[in-house]
Amino acid sequence: MNERSGAAPGKGAVCQFLLKSPEETRQLGLRIAERLKAGDLLAMSGDLGAGKTTLTKAIAEGLGVREMVQSPSYTILREYHSGRLPLYHFDVYRLEDPSEMYELGYEEYFYGDGVSVVEWAGQVADFLPPGALRLRMEYGAAEDERVCTIEGMEL
Ligand SMILES: Nc1ncnc2c1ncn2[C@@H]1O[C@H](COP(=O)(O)OP(=O)(O)OP(=O)(O)O)[C@@H](O)[C@H]1O
Ligand SMILES: [Mg+2]
Image (cartoon, rainbow, N blue to C red; front, side, top):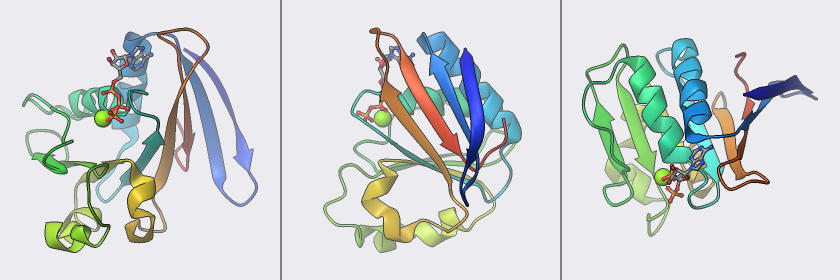
């Protein structure tokens, strides 16, 4: 895993990782999981199939979640309680309207004592807490290559 880090003006730490395989993405997820604490929210963006769910599965693994983690594409939210911290995994791609977040009771999750991971977080930008960690997954040059940029977390 190649990595670069620096600081964006006013934004704190920015780390970038070149992930050359799904296994390297898994290693990054395990590393993120070690740093996560109660109340953290990881706002994920990136194209379809970039690897947001793959990374979230590794974060779940790192938190010690024992259940099978599946993409919440159709359910919007899946929660897991068997790990070190509760994990609330959102995928808001299929929300018809951001206001559906109220029906989901999002505040209990975003401001609760677990960790929230939100795929397609840009769709619910107005609902994200100011302290959200930002993570972007992008396609790299080769087929199994991805570039992950993380803001707000020292890794
Ligand atoms: N380095 C890599 N890291 C992550 N996934 C990779 C990598 N190389 C190849 N892949 C493949 O890319 C796919 C990523 O799919 P995944 O469902 O994680 O993406 P996603 O960003 O969650 O997509 P969606 O926007 O549809 O939710 C998987 O099939 C995975 O095996
Ligand atoms: Mg996904």
